[in-house]
Image 1 (cartoon, helix red, strand yellow):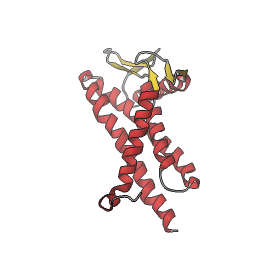
Image 2 (cartoon, rainbow, N blue to C red):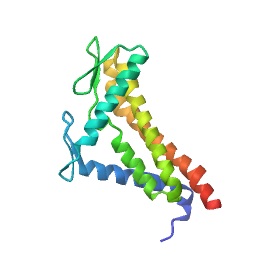
Image 3 (cartoon, rainbow, N blue to C red):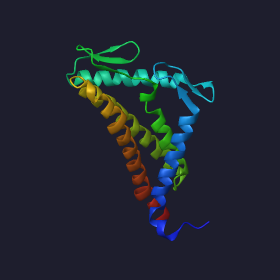
Image 4 (cartoon, rainbow, N blue to C red):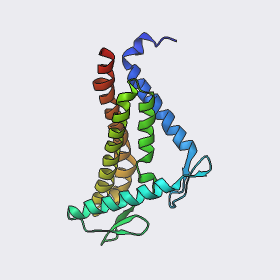
Length: 185
């Protein structure tokens, strides 16, 4: 089947969107977790341990960064980062960045380019996702110290979509600088 001529210049972007949506909906319908608990399941199998580990790790590193920059937060059991004024965040399994790492991995598996380069580029992308996720938690927690009403906007709108924009730019770099260069050789 031939790709329509009018859409050829958008072929890569269409691929990205389709891969992203396929990975997103696959995740949405197969990975189930309780918002306030540690139980995460994939087709009924308990896959909680990586999420428990990562939510604790993200909470710990975010709390350390906040305190380094002078925010006086305390990390409580259950991955709660809280200020003295009781404003705070609860770092749950969905805050780990594992879903975004999965989506990026799916996109890269099906992207053009050699596996030789994908094998070093994918871990680099995972690192970018991890760092952005920590940045996201730190910034949200910093802002809600005095403005807890900003949480929903920052968490549900701004950073959720910035996460996918960042993944898009990691993929664009792959497409334009690495995969395209490979094809010209």
